Image (tube, rainbow, N blue to C red; front, top):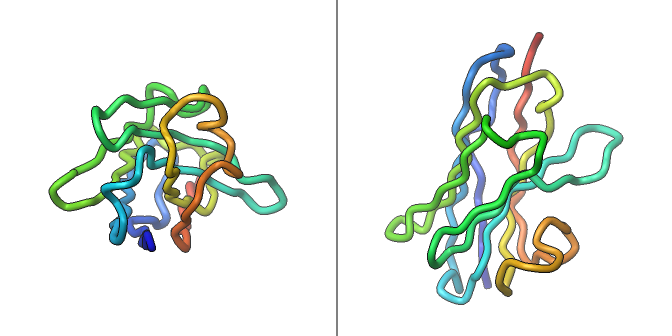
Length: 126
């Protein structure tokens, strides 16, 4: 059983930065892809970024490309999301998720991920 625990959310002004962390435990060696998603009030959960646990290939949503960086520490079993130049529209609950299959078709579809953290709130003020 994979367990994911996010941290690092908070309130920040527009243009500021935050770094989210996601501590992973359980069958992490079986995990192929870890991803970040976000959900704003009244909106669907949307893809932010993914990283392949082995090899480190990454992918990003167009809305965050160039501002956010996903990374992982294989020794600490921790996933990160460095968020720079934050905008009010980045305000959402951010979730990390584990996908027990490789990248490819559906990697940006939340329905293809198998395990989820509880989420951490990010609020960006204008």
